[in-house]
Length: 228
Image (cartoon, rainbow, N blue to C red; front, side, top):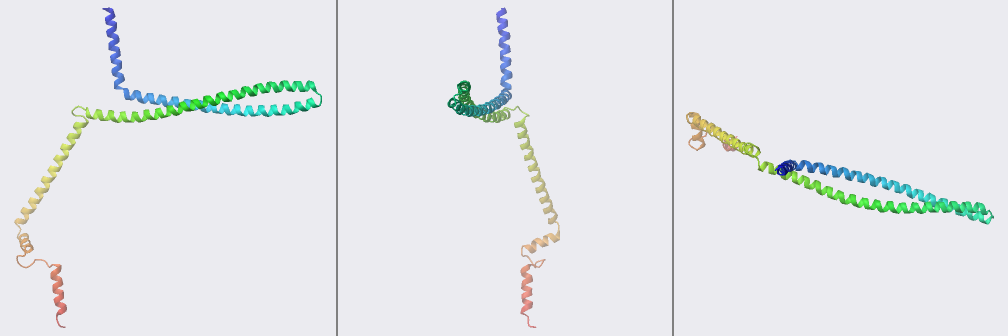
């Protein structure tokens, strides 16, 4: 029984933790992407340091080669002059410098190989990071859409429906107001003798109440054709 109880506790703890992780998966993903970006930035700094160190090693190698070349010339001169002890001392120094030169050459090869390997890793990591960032933007958009679609009554979708109904009521009311105003204007004109006369004149019943442009032109033309 005790084992079952512990199993139940572990099971509940696991399910609770899994529920928390699922609810906050997007937040966790964003933090993981930030951690990846920080790690890549640190790797880039490490590569920059390695390149600088390699450049120092190259400069040291060139100095060693120049010193060896100079000592060899001087040693040959000492041998030619019969200064054997001095020539031997110089030869020992040359041997030591050659060993240091060879070690520097091996260090350069190691640096170059490691730098190229790190550069490849960083390039691949940056590509994967950009893909993660694109994926994060997509899942964030999908998550927002799903939350909108799964909203309960009274939330976003319900608010949209309420707003549409309010807009419809406003438009219907405005149409009613316009129709009422037109009907009122019609009723006012129907009881006005002047308005009735204007309607009859406009329909061609009787003489026009106002001069039209055509009538004015006709009158002026007649005036011009009269003898002086």
